[in-house]
Amino acid sequence: MSRGRQDNRRRWDLHPAEARWFAVRTPAKWEKEVAKRLAEKNIDVYLPLLSKVVEYARQKPKKIKVPLINGFVFVNITEKEYLAVRETDGVAFFLMDAKVLRAIPEREMDIMRQVVGEKVKIRKAKFEIGEEVVVIGGNLTGMEGKLIERKGKKCLVVALMMLDKELVIEINPEHLRRK
Image (cartoon, rainbow, N blue to C red; front, top):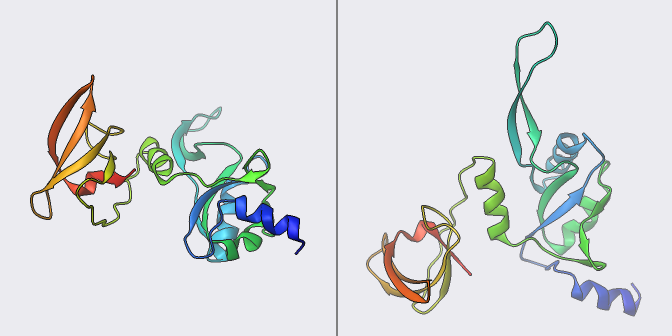
C-alpha cells in the first residue's frame, strides 16, 4: 500500500478492533439480497424494514416489508472486514463524506431502529459520575445531560438542561447512552 493511501485510511473511521456502523449503497430493490449475502459472510448487517400494506387488482391486500431507506444497508464492521463487504455482489459503494469514510454514530442507528418500531439494543454500560449522557428511551429521548449521582443499579440521577434551567431526574441506566 502506498504511503498516501495509508495516510488516507487513517482519516477513515475504520478501526482495527472496534466495529463501527457504515452505510453501503446497493442497486435498487437489492437491499434484502445484499443483506443476505453479507450475513452469509458473517458480517453484522442491519436493514431497517417498514411494514406496508399493498393492494393489487383482484387480490386481497398483502402486507410486505420495504426498506426504510431505499438503496442502503448498514454494516457494523472493523477495518479487516471492509474488503469482504466491498467485494460482496450487489455492494455498489460505501457512503463517504468528502472522500472520507465516516462511521454512523450509534445514536443515529438507535433512532432508525425506533423509527421502524424495533426495540433499541440495550448495552450494559457502567456510567461514571460527571459523564455526559444522552437519553435513548422514554419521553425524554434525545435530551442530553450529565450524570450527577448513583442510586443503585437501576437508578441514576441525571441533570438535564432545559430552557437554561437544570432539571434533575432519576432515570433507568437502560435509557441512557454515553454522549
